Image (tube, rainbow, N blue to C red; front, top):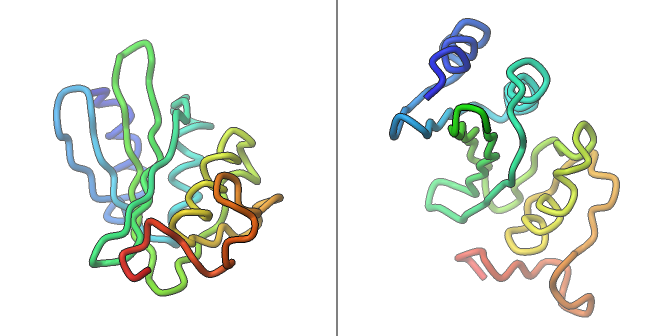
Amino acid sequence: MSKKVLEALKTKFGDRVDIHERSPRRAYVAVSNDDWIAVTRHMYEVEGGRLTTATGSDRSTGVELLYHFAFDREGTVVNIRTTLDKPFPKIEALTQYYPAADFIEREIFDFLGVEFVGHPDPRKILSSHDRPADFHPMRRDE
């Protein structure tokens, strides 16, 4: 794992990031919702990470989001993680800064009901448009 990237995160954000190295090629960085945009933007704009995708899952603690940043030259991935409160998970959209996040944020909205504040096109993307707006098939409470 690129020690430089992880050290830079620790230097800039201090105790506001909780870093776990799972292997020499993968690390997870837990952040609060308040620091979400600052950390993800830092990963791209300062460290040069490439946003590959994002994933969401319904956990007992809330809806977990992970944004996966690749460092291709090193063959490493840093995953930025945050957990949103249910029943109405909400967070600032990364799409407004990086258009590449558009599809995946719409998919996470569609299936998990996460409201991405500031998203330019927050419509369902994969499910039927006649499905009830408050039905999110990957939520355990559905």
